[in-house]
Image (cartoon, rainbow, N blue to C red; front, side, top):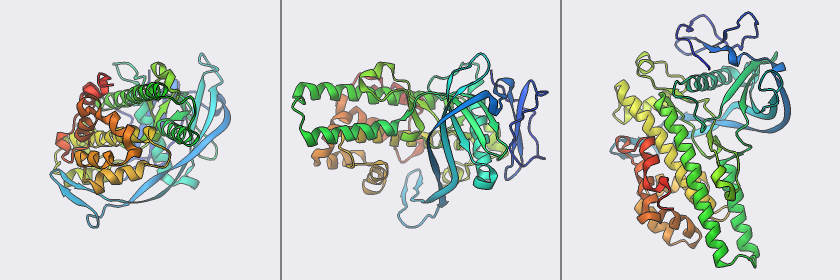
Length: 410
């Protein structure tokens, strides 16, 4: 079991280190420089690893992060009962992440497939890369040490190490090579291909069965993602970067939906919302979140905690909207940004007005039908999760218990 010791805080360290000292048989210690103080976090011996502990395979891919560069209250912002929705300026961040296939090379888990996530050293990524790696490792360590047991809908961290060049490598059990974004992309391309070539076998019965399988797959995907989010919230952690690319899938075959296990990843920007932490003002990666909380009227630690949870639910609502539209449309009809602009800017989060708009576009027909199931249960849930007043948004458990999510509507 992974443990985080409360007495491992320090103000005298400025860089993150994964200890390779064999004398440290009970802890893996690393530190991270913060604006206010540096924190040393200690992880149990199960995470003491070295480069020799893993065999590295092929490069899976790489990706970067977007930095928010302004929180201007002008321009296209608009008021609502809970504060303001911000139209933010974003730019490409300096931290580039690489992913590799691999497997554990030593010990009882030898041969177990892993995915290795590589953060650049300070020379390439600056102190931000070290902070992100440390935050992700600490988040997984806290979540995996719960007395309630591990959550199958969160990717599991199995170790980490630092190379001589200063790169931080985190090793996760291989939960799948695909993401929800991959699934949506592949499925929408299939839709386009089927319509373009007018397959002779694409009769009405086949189409109905395909749509039924798709609806079930999407619901199962959402159930897993929200279950992982509920687990995080129950343990006082926000995700804060929830989206189609942050949900890992073990399969994208809709016929294999009964065996689908979605898992949340990318906890580099996760936020500790324990009341004591909010009172102390240790706000790594969350300054913008708390500025928005104050603007929405959340000033006390408990109000900020509620705002943070509601902010994650809003992101989950955008994920629901994405999965309700993209897999049911042809490729290129709608994407993440266009859908979010439609919801926030065009219709100002009025889902009834958006539904009327979508009804007039035949290309969105199947998406509308999906959300219409159970007397418009999907639209009702989406409206609740995207409620402009953060106080009126449901918690993750309530989302899971909604009739659209339980599958009764499908």
